Length: 320
Image (cartoon, rainbow, N blue to C red; front, side):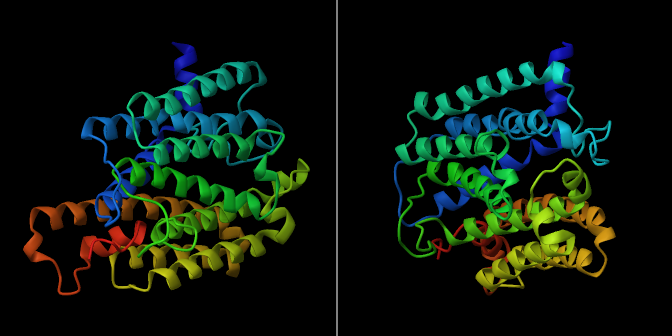
């Protein structure tokens, strides 16, 4: 029981929602795609969605806490409440790594056993590989400046694509999909996450410097990292274009948070928390708006935007 409590704490329950949220957004856009592969049943979607909650969080956060032990000792953000992580004693490292490995097998076996499309299996495999490579050596991408933030954003895109491909969305060139073959608005989500990650690195810059860890913030400075994050949001806004949509409001609010540390780096932690809570809150607004548009389809706005606009903002434009 103590072991289970430890694993729950290390996985940061507040972060359990991010994988399912991204998966659900991707699934909605996969269903709205004009280019379909075979779509999964609802029960299959629910099972894979749940696998991206606690199990994925255990991999992403647990493995990170194991290999960040030396820097976490110096980091005031790693507090007893575990909201932003905790200092994981070395005695617990084997348990966490073994549990993360088992969670990896569970997440990977699900799409195989449920006969999901090959694109979904490959996307899931890429998500798991990158989740480990971000924290664990030898790649340990989180110690490669700029790549640390971009790889964090890529994890988000892959979680989104798991839902997108499971629901029947096809990858490849087409309307609403960029040169990479990935839905353009899914890439926008990754940019936002890369920006927030850079802001988090600005918060940790002193602890990382003291531990000799290289991050985007130790390379560019706290202001430089915040500027990179703001730049990511600016690119996302340029891609979104529809600033009157719910997602447009989300991007503008996030950009405001990212600009705060440019004025005074001491506000980086406040801005980081604001960006995270803003993301969760606006996700709830989007889902509520999407549910309303499904329940009352004739009450959509003249631009067809409300829920659909943010839906396309997280995924792509094929629904029109």
